[in-house]
Amino acid sequence: MEWHTTAADVGERWERADGDAVVSLRETATGAWAVTYDRLRQAPEGEAYRRETCETEADARALAAEWRDGDSGQ
Image 1 (cartoon, rainbow, N blue to C red):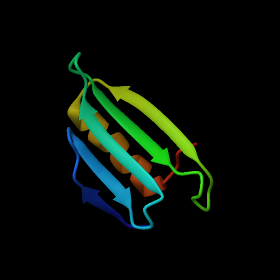
Image 2: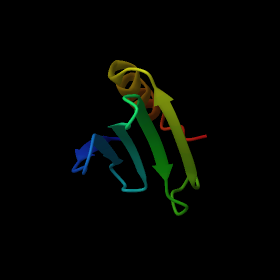
Image 3: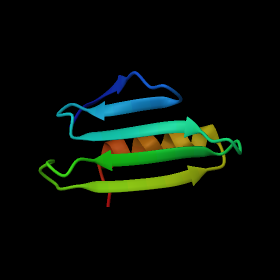
């Protein structure tokens, strides 16, 4: 499924074309990078939530892309 960038207060945010899932990326207060995957309960695949912290922005962006490509919020 396609993803598009949406407005974010901080960092960057991508929303799935059907609106049922969001991946976001932001820098934390400690300088690490947080990546979250949030899929709504009403999504065909059911709800899911993941959050991981990465040391670098490059690693966080790679993880966000991986989650969007695989669309796996297990």
